[in-house]
Image (cartoon, rainbow, N blue to C red):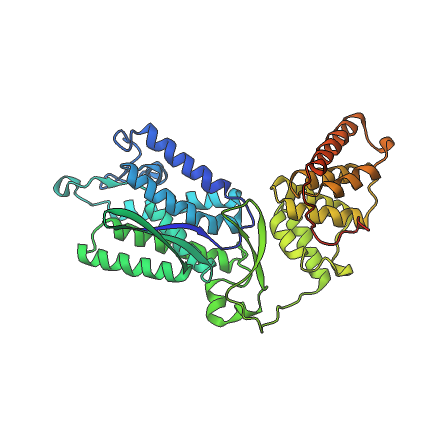
Length: 403
């Protein structure tokens, strides 16, 4: 059995929408007793058009294995789409795929004789998830999915891991579904519904790409076909499964001898400001860090502070620390708040108590209100405790605040 685990596609947003959809499916599973009491949720055949069923049927599953299989797939491929769109656009997109797929399926089956066949309808998220697989093939073909191959060896379960490019996995899945559908006679069966969902997802994905409603950074399927992807950036951010940080890793599809395309610093600056205004902080940081040493690309104090706050909200401690260090190196911190925040980050998340103590010592009691003075003392005590315990100072690299 093949189980997709995670993707190395760029993640500019946390997968809150994917998590929410998985929770909603699990709640529905409990509410309907595993599909046994799902009247009103099934997508019925031969009984007219019912828009509510188009949506609800995608959340109904018949049995735990049906639910688990679909949720594993949703977790893996929901990351790809939501990582580019954010939950506020991904969740409506997911609902749209449910509605379109359900409408087409029910319309095809309007004249279906359920009594003669014994099949009254369908349920499950697999068609919509297959649409996400097709969409991932359009938007991120060269990225990879980490797969687990579960098999039995002398009566014991074993697991082997391997990576596969998204486009290879998608094409393989399409060929497999076509083969099974052919063997079953191309009726309204599971592989046919998967292919229908894939066609809907591919169509919506292409439309969004052509309308520039999604930014694939020049690594979409059409750019790869044309060879334009060799002019895209040389790195991307990946959410590592073993730690909650984003790190920059080289894109496997870019050769070492291909130079990245450099944009005008002023153009980059405007793009970064737009991303910050849209609260796309991870995307803003990814772009800004490549150009922030260029004076014309540097952003002013308010958006820089907003970027730092946004990254800290996302718990991107390394990135937030770097932006705060730049802020303090370029601008005067009259209230001391930025220094206090940075000191807290250095103690709690960067294991740099001595650097934190330097920041606390540089603060004047007159610049802090009573609440922040208490906080400063707590940070000082925490830093001193780490120093006393002999913690090794870990450096984040050169900082404008250090000698």
